[in-house]
Image 1 (tube, rainbow, N blue to C red):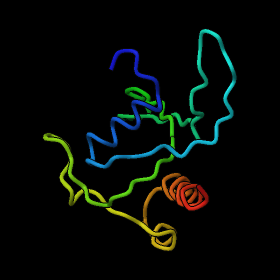
Image 2: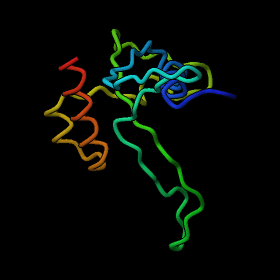
Image 3: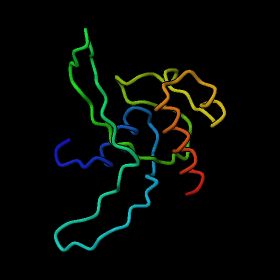
Length: 118
């Protein structure tokens, strides 16, 4: 959306794709700015190659990774989004034992720790 900053886009995407109402877990230190504001700092900024064919990268995604808490685990996506069965919740031991990509596991474990500490 126009004029949407990264953390707001992330929260909106969660609402649309899952129906959850996330609350950002943020420990960013603010700076007083007469004509500005401090934005939440992503926990990670990742660059992913997408649509790689024959060693050629079709395009790339820049992912700003934020952590959030959800008070519900009931998935109720907006029309046109993946159905609830496409989503899974993981405990830390389940993540470690999963066959998910290593970055997903590492960031997922970090997110669990951050939410538990918040």
